[in-house]
Image: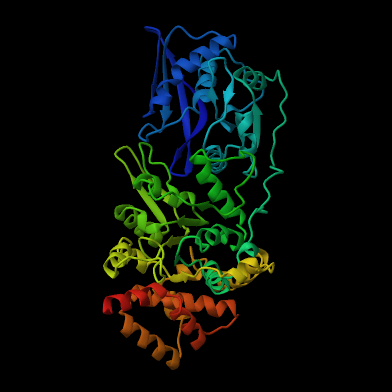
Length: 513
């Protein structure tokens, strides 16, 4: 009868249970690993054999068959090594369990040739899958113990090598499980602050609106006026992540192998700023294993595209679906993975090819300016709620010692507005802020009086806004009202919204000329 040992695999950012079935048969000595494993799994046979022999046990001289069930799902990774080695030693009766229910244990870890346990990526979603499957005990490499204990209700055992795992299972070594992670605090520690921003009070106010409602934003300005500086500080004014959000972000980074500290949750909202030479796959996800891209790594945080007009049109247009659906599906021949991508999109660009449009330095013609701005397609601009020009800071503002408003002060305003929205949308699934409102919710919560309607109608007819842009006007207006704790959208909120589309007005003027 085949031995069965529990391990786990990753599908997208979620883990699932894998049963490692091991059997030894009479025949030509060989080892066969089946169950749609990748090359790393196929190479496990050599690592397992060397590790077992160097640990002081005998490698069975029989035909060995190892099945990773379910066998119809593609699996990848070297973390099955430990489970396969334990299963083989159990099947060859070289391990005698001491009052341990092997069915209530999960095994994760890569083996070195000398039998040492190496850390693996994706431990967090695998431990979450263990808990959902009713498996309460997990054995992981020592370096992964902190990540494993991020899941409450799991007993995690961190061990150094195959020999220590066997000693523990046989009752020859006492190992105390760790059930709670003492380092998983949700207090971010940012090293930058909005108080460093000078002379951009009007722009900062629109940044607060964008953060309060989760709105996308485009900043247009000459080089050195502070676009990148401001964008990097946006995460410092976003609300603190809930435990659920932090776990979701940590899962993505765990799967991608990007956890800097394996023992801590990701508490700072992600800020991703890919270079304009980034490929389509690196931005939306892909590759041979359909890994998450920048849009998913920015989940619950900020995706910042500096010099957005320099990105290829194909790459930019690929953002349309993630921005709209808040998730991205990466389809490959072998697998199809869906990753969350609920990010706040912030973009920055120069007003013209030379960057100094409207000044004496600029020598660009109107045609060159139009051609440059058309690199950002209409559908992408349509999905950006706020478009603001960033003006250079004058000498007086730069030399004054007066500091601007701090991130803590701005975040308090943002959190108050987000709390209003949280209460408003508490009965609606996947709706957390104004930017996520559906057409039905817009009709319910964004009602206008006659004066506001008339004002918005004038702008709508003059600039030829689309229906999507009209809805975005109402969403942003709702956020302006929330920041002032107003239950209704007022005329002044509509006026502020109309002042948030600088690029549309400039474009209309240039086309007219």
